Image (cartoon, rainbow, N blue to C red):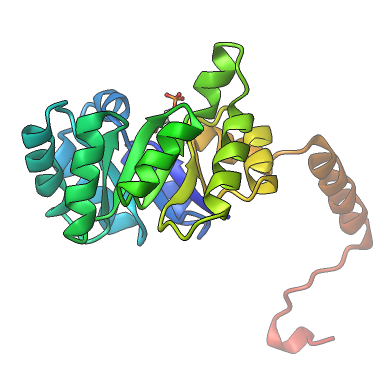
Length: 224
Ligand code: G3P
């Protein structure tokens, strides 16, 4: 499973990219607004930090303007994947951009029927929003399960990118269901590392080690 980071915060991306675990980045208009930065500038900068797909979302809703915005975003860097909403015009743009070789991430997906349409429009990624479905008392992971199952019968180029991830359990469930990618907020990636038994175990190892008085790294004269 690939991990994308769901943020437009360049400092966070730089920090997490250093772990070598980041396969791509996703942004959206809300995340760009939160960064307080210019979209073209920040997307270009992210593309220099991470060698993988970087989703940048259009802001218009009509076909012509969305297509022009998509082309502008795609021209920023070869790794840009243009994000479009799952609307009729959005899928028309998806088809046009995909046909001309640009990767498209179709976002705001809330049903398997929408996911099927996006795949037929040539989407490189479909983004089911699991957290937002859970928020309204629905089951986000059931949607992921349905999309993975529907896609498994066909030869679509579309990868299932689980979005609106709220915690480590979402990531694990997405992996269990065979989703291709999870886009994860920085705080959730950090939460994935954490376990109280790891901290407790490490503290005990360090205490026992200190009692031995040993060192592993030795200077030349001190060879074992
Ligand atoms: O990038 C799209 C998606 O991950 C947004 O998540 O937390 O705003 O529902 P959220």
